[in-house]
Image (tube, rainbow, N blue to C red; front, side, top):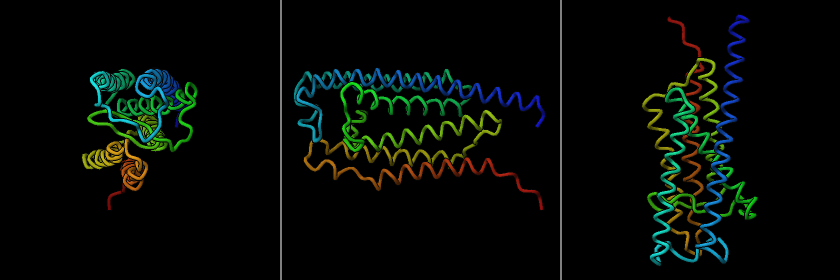
Amino acid sequence: MSNDSADKLSLSLKTLVTRFIIVVIFGVAFGYIESAVVVYLREIFYPAGFTFPLPHAFDINPLWKRLLLTETGREAATLVLILSGAWLFGKNPRQRFAYSMIIFAAWDIFYYVWLKVILNWPASILDWDILFLIPAPWAGPVLAPVLVSLTMLVFAWAILYRDCINKPIKASVWDWLGFSLAGLIVVLSFFLAGRFMTKPDFASHFSWPLFLTGLLAATGVFVKSFVAECSPPRSPD
């Protein structure tokens, strides 16, 4: 590699690190906004304390129904903001996908960090939380979404690094289908658990095997794409 090429690569890597840090800071601030809203919601819905099993369903009175609808809209707006930020940070579909994962992951991880700072919750990484409300409540132990977010950060860095060195990861249609199916399996584990969050035996309804199957499958598909693009081309016979 020539000195000029090395200098360009060094500059590109510095730019990548700078942008990565900026996007993480954006996600951290976004996480604080999310946690602040949840602090207020818990004062309204759970003045005696937020703990599983939850003492009630969401639809037992008109006020809560209205607040639930508002909160669902806020969550939808959050997704729009994540995608909008990723679109502005990224220069191509790969980068935008990577930046959306970074924003989501930093937001999700620091949402729990800020709740710990403000409310001293969760007491344990295995405490349960309501994760999402669209199209119905998702639930599960805090450790599960944090594992997903950490995995997303690794995926995102790998995608951006490979773009930086001009060796982009090129996933096939089958790779995308496999990755999407794996993601749906993870979502299904949260969705199924959410159906039992008011039950005394709620903890037994989160399927770690189902969750880990989805997470490991997504990792396997990603590693396959990453390694395939790293492999040198075969010489003709």
